[in-house]
Length: 501
Image 1: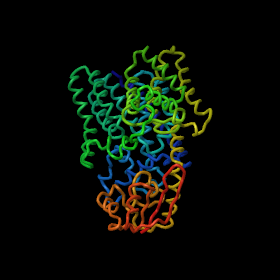
Image 2 (image 1 turned 120 degrees about the vertical axis):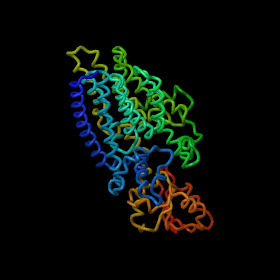
Image 3 (image 1 turned 30 degrees about the horizontal axis):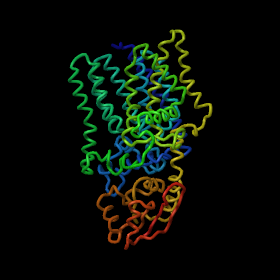
Image 4 (image 1 turned 180 degrees about the horizontal axis):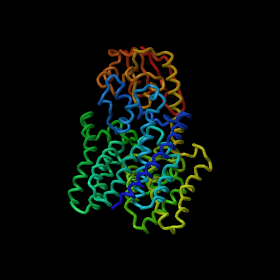
C-alpha cells in the first residue's frame, strides 16, 4: 500500500512534470508553426479535415465519421476546427495532440515511479521519452500516435496501481482508457485480451469475473466500430477490407516483410532505431537486463505488445514500413517505431536501481547520452518522422499551393465545386473555401448522381480533380458540360485539373 506522504510527493512530482512537459511542447509547437510544418504530413491534413467535415459539409453530422480512420482525434479537434484560422494553419489539431502529449508524459512518469519505486528512475524514463525530437514533432501535429500513447500509459499506470492496491476504480479507469485506445488506433484492439489477463492475474479474488468483465466492457469499443461500419456500408469489416482500407491501398503489390517474419522484424527494428537512436536502443537493452535482475518485468513486457503488433501487421496486414536505409530506400510509416522508443525509455529507468545509492545520480547520464545524438547535428533532416513528412509531401504541397491560389482568385462563394477525396480537401483548407461549398464522396446520393450522370446533374460550376481519379473519369464522358480551364503538373504526382461548367 502507498502511504499518504508518498501520494503527496507523487502528486507534486507529477504536477512539476506536467509543467515542464507543457513548456517543452509549447516551444516545439511554436517552432513547428513558425516553419509551417504542422500540415506537412498528408495524414495530418486529412485528420484535420475529417474533424472539420463533421460541422462543415453539405451533409454535416455523424455520417461524416467515415469507416477506416477511428474517430477520437477528429472529435478532439471539434472544439477548435470550426475556427477558420485554426483550421487553415493546423493549430486546431496541434493543441489537442499537445495536451495528449502532456497526459502521456505524466502517466509515463507515474507508471515508472510506481514500477521502480524511485523518483530518479521515473525522471530518467520521462526525459528519455520527452526529449526525443521525433516524439516532439508527432506531438505538435494532428497525428494519432501520441493520442494513443496517452491511453496506453494511463492503462499501464492503472495496472500497476491495481496490483499494489486492489482498488476496483482502476479497472473502470482502464476500461475508459481502453475505449480511448481502441477508437484511436487499431493497436488498442490487440491490447484488450492482454490487459484483461493482466488485471485478472493481479487480482487476489474474483479473477474470472474480472477477466470476463473487463474483456467484455473493453470490447464494446471495437464492437461499436464494427457495427458502425456495417450500418454505413453494409460491410462490418469495411475498415479492414473496404475500398479505402490499408489492404485496398496496398493492393496486390508486394513489399519487404509481407508473409516473412524475419524481414518484417528487421524493417520494423530499423524504423525503431531511426526513431529512437542507437544510444536509447542500447541503454534500453541494458535497462531491460537490469529490470530482470530486479524482477520488474511486467511493465516492460506490456510495453513490448505494441511493437509486436506492428511486426505482425507488416507480416500479415498489408501494412508496409519503408526506411531510407533499406530497399526500396524510401519513407513510409516510419513513425510506428515510436512504440519501441517508449519501451526503451521505460526500461532505462531500471538502470538506476542496480547502481549504489550514492551513485544513482550517475544514471541521469542516460537521457544526456540520448540527447547528444540529436544535438550533435541539430537539424530536422535527422528526424526520421519529420523527414518522411517532408519528402513525401513535396508534390502535394506544390499543387495544393498552386490550386489554392487559383481558387482564391477565381472562385465565388455559392458556385460549388465537384471534387474527389484523398489529398484534395487540403486545397480547400489552404484556400479557406468551406467544405459546404464542395460536393464530395461524403455527401452520398448527390455526389453519386453528379459523378454518375454529369451530363444531366451538374449544379456545381467547378470541378477539381486529379487525372485518372473517379471524378476525372466521370468528367470525360460524352455530354459532360465541364471544360478544362487550368492544369498543374508536378513531379511524382498525377496532374491536378480544374474544370468549369
